[in-house]
Image (cartoon, rainbow, N blue to C red; front, side, top):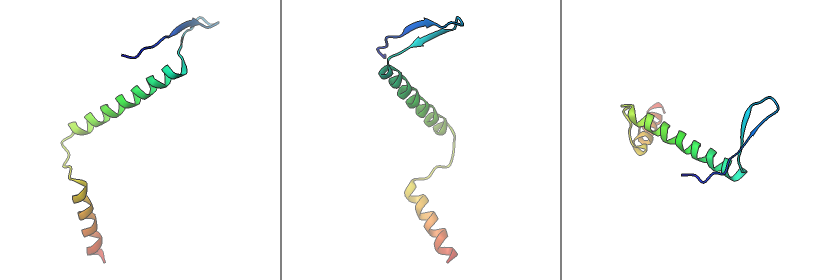
Length: 69
């Protein structure tokens, strides 16, 4: 769990706001970006695509290029 030290204020319009130290804010952003990456990875893995190893993909591309010459 993150060690956060939020401060809470209310602006002149009565809107509640949270203030964090920059280091804490950057840590939260990094964690959210990592979570997005994990979600995207899980989404791609859940699809039943016909994935092939990169080496095979390069061989197929090279083969198609050679046959066009």
